Image 1 (cartoon, rainbow, N blue to C red):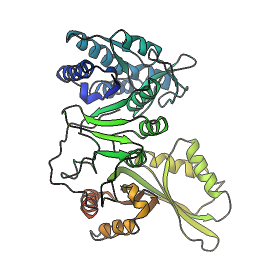
Image 2: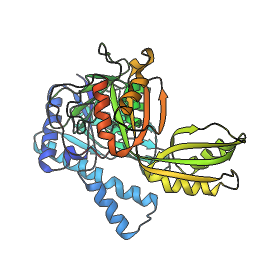
Image 3: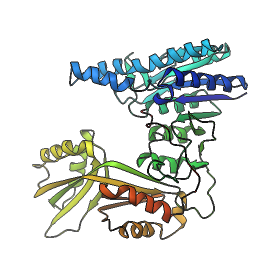
Length: 417
C-alpha cells in the first residue's frame, strides 16, 4: 500500500463532468490499495469572478478580507468533490487548509507555511476516507485565515506530501508532463520522462508554468518525489527528483521564457560604495523583485547600470528610483517594455563549453539583438524584443536537438494555481 497525494487544478475540476472524471480517477487509485490525499484548487474561473466582485465594490480591498474571500473557491471545490466521491460509492472527508493543520505566517495574500499538523488527515485515512484538502490556504498562529499566493495549491500538495511522508505527490495539470518547452509554441516539443529538482526549479523560475517554484523548492528540501501528469489522459507523466537520468548527447534539458519583462536603466550614477545597496534595497522594501543586473564601465567617475523587473512593476520601480534620487543622485532614468526573457536550462551545461555561444549564435542568426544576458551553472538567459520570441524559441529548440516527431497533447488554459 502506498500513500499518494494527488493535486488537481482549477481546469481539472472546472465542470461537473470533469469533477466526476477526477472523482473516478481518485477512486481507481484508492481501489488499487492506496491511501489517497487530494488537494484541489478553485473551480475554473471562480477566483477571477471573486476578484471582479471585490473590485466592483472596493478597488483597494483590505488584504485580510481578500483572503477571507479568496479561500471560498477552494472550499466549494472540496465539498463538491467529496460529494461526487460519495455518489460514486466511495468515502471522502473534506478539509479546509486550517482543518488539515496548515499553519502559516501572518502575511495575507502570500503567506508561507510554517508547520503542518496532519492528525485529522491520518484519522480520515484510517477510516477508509479519501482526504480532500483545500489548496492555497492556511491559518496563522493568531487564527487569521491566509492564502499562499501564486502556486499555492501546488505548494500545499507538496508540503502535505512531506508532512504525511507520502510515497509520491502527483500534480495533475492540462499537459502530459514537463516538456522541453511550451508545446503551444513548439508543436514537436519533447516530453521529459525525468528531470532533476534543480533543472525544474530553474525552468519554473524562468517562466515554465507547469509547476510553481515554491513547490519545487519544498520538494527538493524534503525530498518529495513529484510526478506531473495530465488530468485528461492516462499517459505517464514526468518524474521530478534529485538525480534524473540524462539522455546521452542532450546538454540542454528545456527552454523557458517570460513574456512580461521590463528593463530600467539608471544613467550617470556616482561610482561610490553603497549605490547599488541603496537602490536595490529601496526596491526590495517596496516588494519589487529584480532579476538581471548589468553595470557598464565607469567614465569620469560616473557609471550606468540596468536591471530587469516584471512588466507589471515597471512604473512602481521608476517611482521608487525617483524617490531615492536625493540619496543616489543620477543624470536620468530610462525604461523599456515589450521585452521577453528566453532561457536554456540543463545540468549538462556545467561540463560542456560553448553552450551559451551556441545560443547567442542561434539568436543572432535570426537578426535579433540580445539586450541583456544572465548565466549560472545550469542556465543561460537572454533578454530580447518580444516580437520574435516564438521564432527564437523554435530555433533554439532545434539547435539543441530537442525536437521530436511525436505529436504532443495540449489541453486547455494553464492551471491558475
